Image (cartoon, rainbow, N blue to C red; front, top):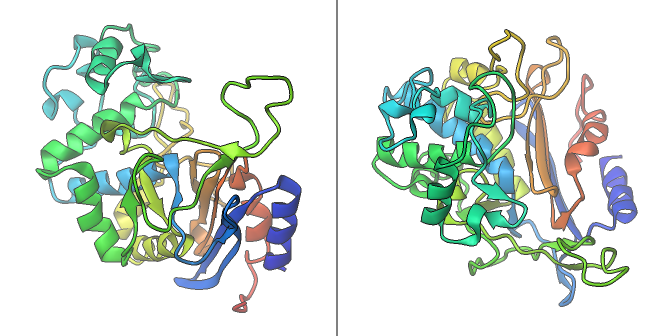
Length: 337
């Protein structure tokens, strides 16, 4: 049933290549791959094909902060000025957890063209620091990359190592993610899927927004906290198992990480610590990681279920069809496929 659903979705959405994994009760019960990793050279997707997960990387950043909090190296309720120097006065009182949950009110260091100002990362930092706050801290949810770029600097300082090295040592290694790496379209990554889109960022002629073309990700090192991981569905499944069985952080920290951040009004924000919180009821909590319009995984904690889908098509938006796959496994005995 799951295979048929995926293959039908791939055909309807014109997805070149895809990996899927389903975790139930601490075990991988489905692990499949379909289609082409590279269309022009007819290279098939395999279990070893690496897909960029883009903003789903933020879930790893959430785990990293919980690890540092458990080690006493970071207090999530502390102002970021405790750990970072040279901040604008209006930024100093923002709490660490508000960066994680996108409730900081900060202006965005990127726009549709990339880093603001069109220059270097250092120039973009100078430009964003000169901007006014977008909103009072804690008032509203507003997704932006400044939050996670600051977290990269914070983790690097408190862990005494670069963020990618910290995640590799404290998460990849623990979960057995042997080939997972950080990188973007300009890095030479073995077994990496080619990323495609049917809609160019800037169509050049009429009709140029409905043909398969390459999509380029350009991720400066300072922004890879929010979008730099390349991995496989199988390795993500192993990471989720390591997370939920207590090998990365304690069960209490997992629960805290998946609890929505409160706004100043007392209402729940749309994110917890690195994870979007979906619109389910308290009796049916769901947390997700969503990246680049092409990668997603949704966790159903009470049912000990997670569904992971990675694709190489911008606009595939697997978070939209993962619930249909999850429905095949929810509240029912699972038979390995």
